Length: 116
Image (cartoon, rainbow, N blue to C red; front, side, top):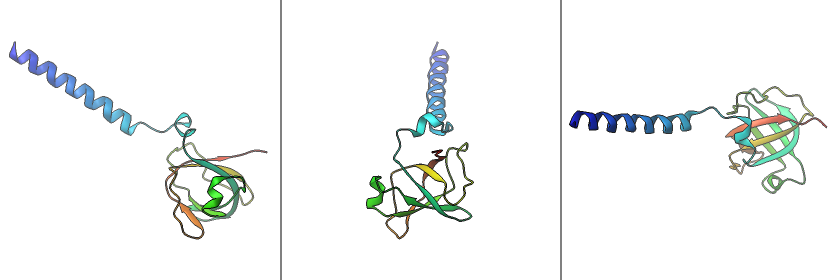
């Protein structure tokens, strides 16, 4: 009887830990990013691991800087990481902009190409 209780206690613990680990390490999807901070702009320069984006004037991020260096190390692996100068893009990020010039965003969830 005592062994049965211990078995069920351990089984429930393993199940709960499994659910928590699944949630923490599940891959990001497009549905996960739409409520994240974001802005649009035009790609002005391209580097190996980042792009320089000229922020659209109607975006709140323009208060931080008119140009933002955006990391290409995106968390959503289906996101585009190959751009051309002049591309209009929408950047989804963690809300943190480093106050340098140009400003910098390191935690990028996704970069979407906007067709106009």
